[in-house]
Amino acid sequence: GKFFAFLNYRLSKFWLGLGLWWALACVLSVYPGGSIPEMMTYYTRLYPIPFLFGAIVTSARQVRWLMHAFAWGYVLVIIFCFMFGGYSNDARYNVSEIPALGNPNDLALHLMFGASFLLVFAGSKLRLLLLGILPAVLMLVLRTGSRANMLAIFLISLICLKLLPSHQRVRILGGLVIGGLFMSPFLPKATVARLGTFFGVAPADASSEDLQSAEASTEARKELQKQGLIITLKHPIFGVGPEMFRLASDLVVRENTGHRSGWQGTHNTYLQVSSETGLPGLFFFAGSLFTCIGMNYRCLRAAQKQPALREYMITSFPLLIACCVYAFDVLFS
Image (cartoon, rainbow, N blue to C red; front, top):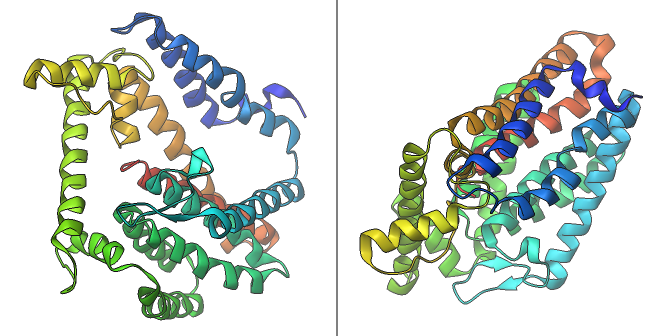
C-alpha cells in the first residue's frame, strides 16, 4: 500500500490534530521545551504506527493474521505473569521483573486489553485455548486488586450481552457466575477486602490495615484528579506541557501545603492529556479514541446484518472490545 493511505480515513483528522497540538504544547505551554526529550520517543516510535498499519495491512486476511500475532503475544504475557508474578506487601499482584507490568493497575489494564485480542481465537480452531485462557486472565486481573478493572469486567460483559446473539448471552452470564464462585477462594483476603471496598462491603475477616490502605489509595487518587482538573482550568489552551503534570502538581502542593508532593501522575489519562496539552489536546485525543470505537461498531453491525461481510465480525468485535476497555480503563490509569 501507500504510507499516506491512512489519510483517507476520518480518524486521521483527529490523529493529525493530536500530533500537531501536542507539538505546539511542547513549545507554547507553561514549561516550554521541557517536554521535547520525552516526546521525541513518541513522535519517532508511536505516532507513525497508524500510517504503517494503513500501508502494510491491506486486506481482511492480513488484519486477522496481525490480530492472531497480537493474541499470541498476550499468551506470552500471561505465561510471564505466572512465571515471574508475585504479590507486593499490600497483597497486590504484579510482575516486578518487567517494568511495564510492575504497577498492578497497569498490569490489569494490559491483561484486559490483551484479553480483547484473544477473542479473535473464537473464530478459529483455537476456541478451546480461548476458553482455557480467559478464566486465567480474569483471575490475574482480580489478583491485582484493581477495582477499576473489576468494574471494567462488568462493563465489558454488559457490552457483550448487548452486541452478541441471545444464545451466546446465556454462556456469558453462566461463565461470570461460575467464574466468580470458582476464583474467589484463590484470592488473598487482603485483595478481596480491597475489591469489596468499591461496593462498600468488607469481609468479616478483613484487617483494618487492608481497609485503610484501600481507602487511602482512593482518597489519594481523588486528590490527584482534583489537581488535574485545577491545572486544566488554569491552563486550558496549551496546558503545562506533555509529561509536565508531576512538576506542575508538585508546585500546587507546595503552594497549598508547604510540603513536597508524591511526584505522581493523575491516574486518569483524560485529565493528564487535558492538564498537559489543554482542552484542544483532549479533544483530539478523545476524538481519535471514540472514532475508533465508532468505526469498529459500524463494521460489526454491518457484518452481523450482511452475510457477505461475516468474515469481518471476528476482527471488528475484538477491536471494538479492546477500544472500549481502553476508553474506560484510562479513566483510572
